[in-house]
Length: 242
Ligand code: ADP
Ligand code: MG
Image (cartoon, rainbow, N blue to C red; front, top):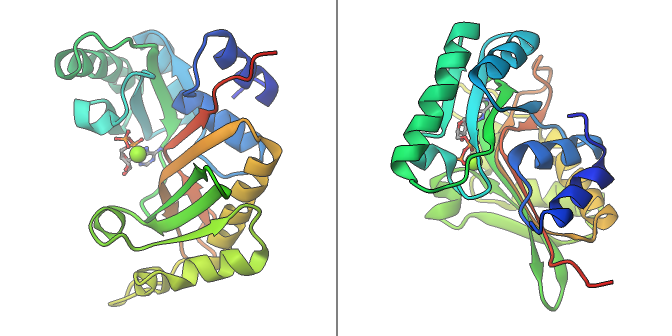
């Protein structure tokens, strides 16, 4: 995560891209204080092994391609990579799998990232409404969003009260509060995350879409912290001609 926020946006613009890579998206978000798993781009198996060695194990490897929308659908995500040898082999394995499942997709390399401990899965998103402007969405992962449409929306900018309401108004709240002997998650950490996302969007009007899917949420006092986004996707609006 070495590039400065302005350089990340500028280099995407220079390349004529509106979609930022996961590595770029996470660097931009981390600079804004949004918790993400640190990710770096490797362009060879050896580089993947070296970055993994710096992070410490386990790490996660993911295909880096702005032409692949759902990385796991094409064999592009490998979790639980345990040592440097596995990181090097994983690099080749992922590139080969994506080559079979999505032939022709341009591959920039493989992102190497710290593996977050499993938590309760949530989703945070931003879309832009033509009339009302940016809207923040919060929900739980998987079927809660896809099947049950169990999500909360608020317009940017969010007030603290909006964030507090969003995490509590979804029907899946018992999942966050803890059920069947599972401890509840740190709701205030999720509120802070939503407020940081709102502040990020205010500071970056060029961002029209944002997906943090999934966010892992943890119980209060968990060593991993309150919540962390393990996948991120930032979309810029079309460049306004100067
Ligand atoms: P995509 O959504 O493009 O298929 P993701 O980056 O969301 O790919 O990865 C798929 C799944 O792998 C996630 O839902 C999560 O369960 C797991 N995962 C991804 N990155 C990490 C990470 N850094 N730490 C732990 N688990 C991860
Ligand atoms: Mg994802």
